[in-house]
Length: 308
Image 1 (cartoon, rainbow, N blue to C red):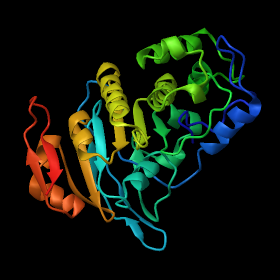
Image 2: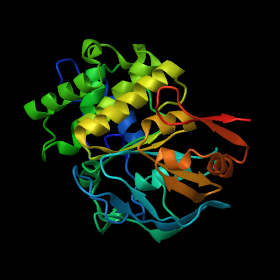
Image 3: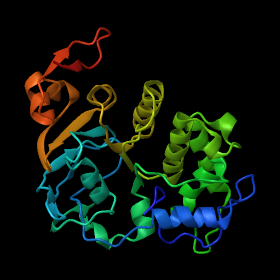
Image 4: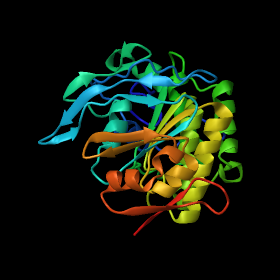
C-alpha cells in the first residue's frame, strides 16, 4: 500500500490539478512501489477519532525471518497524539510499523483495527483510516508538488475515479498546511530535503486518514530540517487530531516532539510512557545498552540525554 494506501487506483496518470499530469510511468511506479499486500495482521480497537480516550491497539504476534524479529506485544497508542518508536537499529521499530501499515505479516498472532481483522479491510477503506510513509521513498521524477499531493486523494475517488472540486480543495488545503503553497508548481525533485519531506507529508494529509505511520521521517535531514519536519508533524497532530506513530532514532528529538514513547530492544518492548517517564538514566541504558545521563532542558522543555 502506498502513502495513499490504495491498490485500486485509476490506471491513468495523476489527475488534473491545475497542471498537466505526470507521465503514466511515474504514477504507475508510485502505485506499484506502495501497492497494499494482502496479509494476516490485525490491531485491536483503534478508534481514530478526535476527543476520544486513548485507543488500545493490542498485538499478540511475533515475526521470525530466520530469527525472531519481534516478540509478542501489547501496546496503547494515545488517540490524537504523536507516539515515537525508539530503540537501536534492528530493535523491531520498522517491523512493527510495517505491520500496522499492512506491509509485514506476522509469523503468528493477530491484530484488529476497529474490532476487525486488518486483512478484512479493503484497500480504500483501510487507506481512509491509515496512511503509511516508508523510509525509502520512490522517485517523483517529473511531478510537481501539487501533482504528488493529489495522489493522496485516490482512496476517495468515486467508481469512475473522477477527480473533482472537493479533491482539489483537499489538495490545496494540504499544501497550505505544510507551508508549500509558494512551491506548489515546483518539481518535487528540485526541492530541498526538508521541503521534499513536507511535500510527501502533504500527500498523507490530503489522503485525509486519521492515523499517520512515518518510518524515520527525518533520516538524511540536517538538524534544521529535522526540527522543521517534526514540528510540522506535531502541529498537524494537534490541529487536526491526528494519531501519529513515527520511528525515530534521535532520542532527544523524540522526547521533544512526541507525546508518548515506545521503546524496543531486540524485538521486545521494554518501556512505554511519556517522555518525562522514559527520560531516565537507568531506562535509557536499558534501551540502548550504554551508560547515559540526563540534563534538564534550559528552556524547560523535555530533559536532554547524553552519553557518558
